[in-house]
Structure formats: C-alpha cells, structure tokens
Image 1 (tube, rainbow, N blue to C red):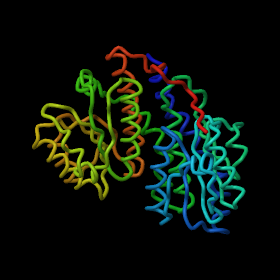
Image 2: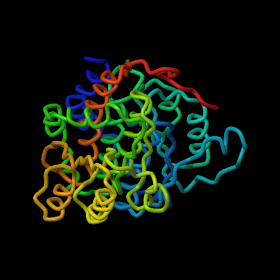
Image 3: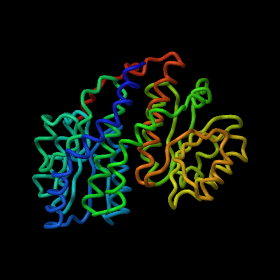
Image 4: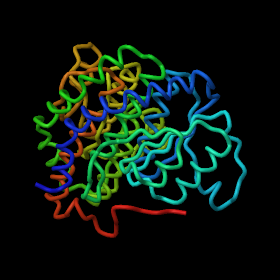
Length: 349
C-alpha cells in the first residue's frame, strides 16, 4: 500500500480528534466576530489549500451571507499594493504554513486590523505565529507528496468554523458523526473506477456548489499522481464551451450532493449521456426521487455511505477518491508518493 493511501486511511481518527480539540478556539473566534462583525472574508491558499478555500467560500456565503474572495498574494508581495482589510475575516490555509507569500499576505492583513485565522498542520510555523487565531489541522506528519489527510482536515476545520460562527445546529449535530461515516468510506470499493480511467489521457471532473472544491482537488490529483490531464468545471460553467470536449465512450467524473444543485446535475448527466459520454457518479446514499433519477442515468455509480448533510457529503467523496486515485496511479505505472517534478513543500514569493 502506498503512503498516499495509508495516509488517507488515517483520516477518520484524526478528524475525530480535530473536532474535539478545536471547539474552544472556535468559540473564542465567534465571540471576537460578534464584537467586530466582518464585512467580508478573504481566503489565502495555494494548490490543494486553495481548493479548500473554495469550500470556505460556499460555506461562509450560504450560511453567514459573508462575501468571500480568494486572495492573490502577488498583489501584495510583487505589486506592493496597499489593500484595505480592516473589516475582513482573513483565513489562511496551508499545510506547512511556511510559504513566504501566504505569510506576507497574512501579516499585512493583521497589521491592517483584520481578524486573522491560520489553519495549518504545523502549529509552530510562521503562518501560525502571525495570525491572531490558530486553528490546527492535527493531520500529523504527511510524507506523501500528494496531500490527502491535510486537505480533508482543512475541509472539516472550515466546516466546523462555519457551524460554530453561524450557530448552525444541523451542521453542529452532523460533524461529530462524520468520523464514523469516513470510517465507512474506507470500506467502499471504487475499483471499477480504476478500470474506467486506467487508459485515458484526459477527462473532466464536474460538480457544483459544495462539491465544486473537491472537483478542483480531484482534477489536481488526477494530474499529479496519474498524469491524466483532468480539468474541473462547475456544472453551471461547462456548457459555456468545454462541453465540446465530450467524447463517446469516454469517462467523466461527476460529484453530486443532494441539495438544490442536484436537478442541474441530473440535466447535465443527461446531456453527457446523449453524446455517448460515460457518466461516473459519486453520490452519497439518498432516497430522494431526484437522486434515483441521476443514478439511472449514470454508467457507473460509485458506492458511498448515507448522507449526513449536503455540506459534508463532498468530504466523504474526496476521501473515497483519494483511495481510488492512489491505486490508479500504480495501475498506470506511477508512484503517487513521489510524483515526477514535484516536491512536498512549495514556497512562492
């Protein structure tokens, strides 16, 4: 078993520890934000961490009405722009917490009076020291170049942060049940997906809403571990041009969750099927009529546990994907623990 797969299998236990350990600091953060309510939120991240930041955007905007933008650190580090961030909630997400541009952006935000939060795996890192609030990821040592457990830990930390700040009771109730559900994910069999993607050179990964950030992450992992040129698209955007890429008998991965986005995913799946494309579907178990309709369209339905809430379903899907793509890489003759031309920590300026 590769390091990547081993580390992905550590997720359920570490998430249980993380949720318990971060409860207190998130309550303090809520009190701080109640005293000085932010006008908007800004996220800082690169690579997989930036995909987690996309998840933060959907969480914060739908549950708090807080407009959330992704920072371009080079605006500060290279162009020397003077940004006004005193009314912002600024969240930096980083596995290492050491990239100079992310640290510099956080430093400027705190100096300008923003409420700053660092979500890092290394609590002694520079980013952790700069931010006003530290929310550790508790993912432990991650040796494989392709991040797995630190990405999932970022998602769960962001979900818990949102649940606490918004006092969102259904999400607060669902989070403690997430580790057990992630343990169920370890038992699902996505081997048929390996056969679907083993010999392809390119594909599309499609989702919408809370699922779009994991489509971004899955596309990255297809590239870095298996040398598959995968691109992530929102189900709302793919019809604007990329749909011309659909080919007969070619597999396309769809992540879906049972919320308001599902009817649109059903309509898109029908269009892909009408062109002869193969719909490979990840969808948590749900008894809704719309879910049943989507399952009928799919050429391959990947097994998943029961849904806890649409906001958390993508976390289950990406864990199952990690286990599959680590094995897919090996099947294609690659080592997912040490992808060609890549290093574990990338520092940008």
